[in-house]
Amino acid sequence: MRKHEKTAILKNVGSSWSALGVNVIVGIFLSPFIVHRLGDAAFGIWILIFSITGYYGLFDLGIRSSIIRYVSKYSATGESDKLTSFINTALFSYTGIGVVCMAVTTLLSSSLERAFRIPSGMHSETRLLLLMVGASVSLGFPLGVFGGMLEGLQRFYILNWTSIGATLARAVLIVYFLNRGYGLLTVALITVLLPLLSSILRGFIAFRLCPVRLGFSHVDRASLRHMVNYGGTTFIVLVAARLRFRTDEIVLGTMMSTVAVTWFNFGARIVDYAQEFVTSLAQIFVPMSSQSEATGDLERVRKIYIAGNRACAFLIFPITAILILFGKHIIRIWVGARYVPGSYPVLVVMIIPFTLMLAQAASGRILFGLGKHQTLAAVTAIEGVANLILSIALVRPLGIVGDALGTAIPLSFTCLVFFPRHLKKQIGVPIGTFVRGAYLLPTLLTLPLVTALWLANRFFYPRNLIQLTIELLLLSPTYGVGLFWAYRTNRAFHVAEIAGVKPPVKAEQPPQALVAVEYQNEQ
Image 1 (cartoon, rainbow, N blue to C red):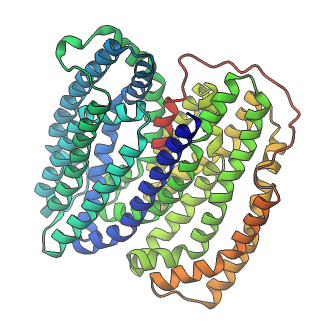
Image 2 (image 1 turned 90 degrees about the vertical axis):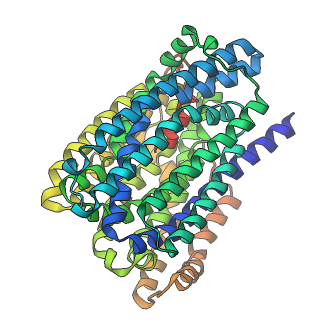
Image 3 (image 1 turned 120 degrees about the vertical axis):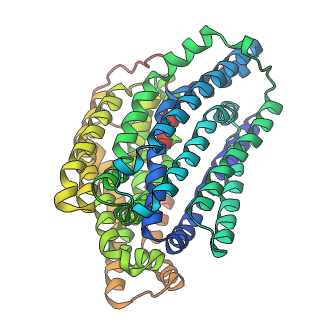
């Protein structure tokens, strides 16, 4: 049994990293290809429409997390009748949400050009694009039940491999049709259709693994009540995450132009890739801390807090050094030199607070694992509102950099002030002990890399992706050797006994480990 569990973990984690790698590689090569074929204005409209429809995710209302929990619970206990009722209730609820989303899309399409600064010649195309994407999202709600079922059955690898297949097929089809002169709507059709086909495939697999009867007679109030009660906290977290990280394109599209959206997106996209890399590691700290809390081992929770954030720092510190010192080269080689003046300042302004956040990526997961996440939800909601207000206030005098600062300032406050103090209160680790234990070693190991990058930046000028890759590979030993030494000498993850106050750790009800999945996906 233990061997089987280890195999399942390796399959799930390995496929997750594979899906992330494919996503990043396809994004790196496909984004400049699309923008050069469509133009800045059309690409900006593309980003704007997907940003608008991204807010439809708030209509989820936490249902996805409840599906994961109750499919897992009922399949483990063999309560097939309850499982059938819950799946049918989820499908019914999501179908209603999909209808509402389509109605909202229709209303938005009639006033889109008045709300955003869209070039006059592209009004009709933009409306069609919104209707197309909105319809896809609306269908995605009921189809998303199948993905939730697979997660509840802990078959993450099925989700990841179908996602990889859809991503690769999308890239091939987009290149094929753009090379033959097709435009924005064709690219959009490919982009929205393939995920729907993947969801249908997941549905066939899910029902083979977990056969349930379908029918309106199986919808019941008890399942709906479980869904609402469990999803409440998730909804707050989803709203907060959307305000924190998904309002920039809306503000720029409203107050500047779709071209500004394109310039901002390139700098912010690079930061997103770094974020995904670290959060893929951080998700493992939810079950680890939850298990420790369940056994009353607070000392292990403290060690996870320090060692987990140290591991995140080992990843994000060198990435940040590379992006700050080589960011201009990366943008120039990726999408073209003309985007460097606008996109590089956005990259620098965004990567600094995101580094503060990602170096503490384990902290939020530990709070979810302990069931002490409600204050975090409230703080991030306040941060999201402040983000929106500051972005609107700063975008006119400072342009796209002002919009980036609107995100950076409240995020920095949350990371510098809230997280260390709140975790000290919850698990009794002094701030000084935490900072030294988590960040001293990663900082010392990163300094030689910073020096090497600075020298290389002065004497070498990479002209293409191959030269840039070779240069980074040649410089990587300045960090890799130190990291290997820390691992071999057991300094990388060793944490001494931590003295401090031992507050009672009581999990809130219901357990929130699965809610953290939603939190992690939005970060």
